[in-house]
Length: 423
Image (cartoon, rainbow, N blue to C red):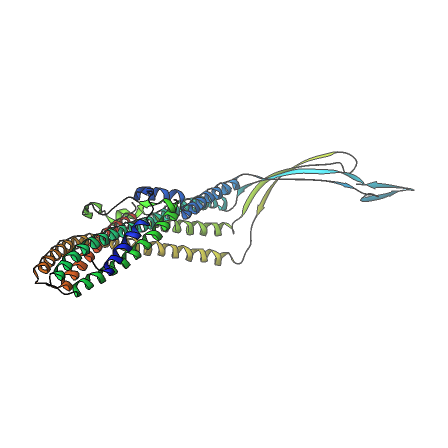
């Protein structure tokens, strides 16, 4: 074995020796999904938004309660606030004293604004819950993409390792043929060049694996220095026919569809709220007042009914504006529903296409494996060149990479289809 090949082999062994000896914590895809739901920053923000919407609903409910206000004060003067001359004498009034009271008012009718305001607040909480569900779907899909990317890279690294072992065997056979005078030295150089290409590919894959692991670990809230994936793509893939559902019937299960519907309800309530602003409002209330400013205690209780009739020139225009906003919400609902159906169909087409690509890739694996075996036999028999053999080896590696890529894509497309149909 020449100096160049020894250098390449030693470099590979040194690279393998630099891998940490301690085993990292290995996570399945289900564990990563669960961790992302609990620890991802977007999920925490969405949960806080939902909690805030719940507080807004409770806040709106307090509008049914009476408003209560308390007031109090004390005064002291040097010469009285009021003075009254009574012959040669002068009387001072409100020289000092205390005053205080309480007032309560209960709305009886406000043009439906309180009732509709509470409905809007409840609707806002429901929309926040739908947004949380939508965010969870987006986070889980990102986890799938990160996770299977790492699995693909690990499989590609394994393919490179197999290719290196194959090249070692090819190099041994070529060297024996060169020593016997059957082949020229150029065959050895071609093997060594191909080996150097694999070394470069290995470095790129290892670097990408390290970065991808850190990205996924950060996304799911794990320790990036003690993180690895446990799944592989070696198993068989089942046909997606069992996942198919009626798309129209599945619409209501999607958070996007329910958010569109809620948008129509919100626009309708906003229109009623605007109309209520221009309707009379009625309130009942009472007050208790105490003071001793006149030099003696006074206790007064007051009850009242108030009626407010707003007069505004802008009433018809603001109501019409809300009407157009409601029509726009209904248009968005209809258009969005159609787009969701198209999205479901596209997701199904992508899923079935990914499955068909897996079948094609499996055929290519069989063909490239047989092609590599034949070219290796032909080379040993002297009826094939080294270039043909290395080309066969390269095709074999490409077919393996293509298969694992299509399997990973299938897993991602399956998640996309399940989410698109509300599952």
